[in-house]
Image 1 (cartoon, rainbow, N blue to C red):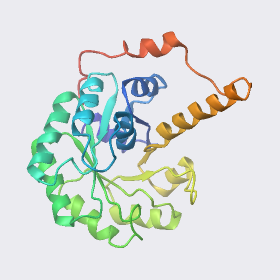
Image 2: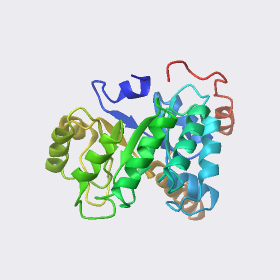
Image 3: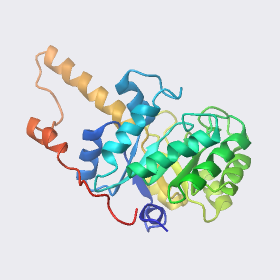
Length: 262
């Protein structure tokens, strides 16, 4: 079992913050997070490209190559694998693993179950040690129908964990944990909207991984706009900000040698 897989079976669930560039990833790692994910929305928006449209393959791989040698475990949000052909998705996964990534998040977008299962199998064949977090969008894009059928198919195809963003009902989460048995369940932290359970509550429910998705990126944009509004109104900006030197130093916090045991 890889070190990243072990984090899904620790006493506490893996709280996975999601970065959108080199500096944000290094800043999160400096806060003590052993693993950092990427957010496809943040990567796409920073590049001026649409999210979920298979438009950021190159940008995603470039970021993985930048962060792969860093002294933390990197999981990459790869949308649907940036291709419909499972062989192409497998090749992308191989490139991610070669860059130093230890995990990949693959979303089904409510497309054909068999095709997504084939993508998962292709990834495991091309990069056996890459932790595949198989996401279904049944609650993100739909009403939840078909969740169990999809997750069972993805687990059979070789998924190491499963992800159900948009699922916030505690009873449904607990029931899904029981259904999955030994397969780690990932839930997206949901502070708005209908408000989802807190991290301690998700822990009690048996969730093994809690992702933040694009939340940090969106909060960063919100803080920038709030700062500008304060300055325009003649107020001192609220909140804190790292110094110029601190941000500049983030570019230097990268071990050129990949950590062993990933």
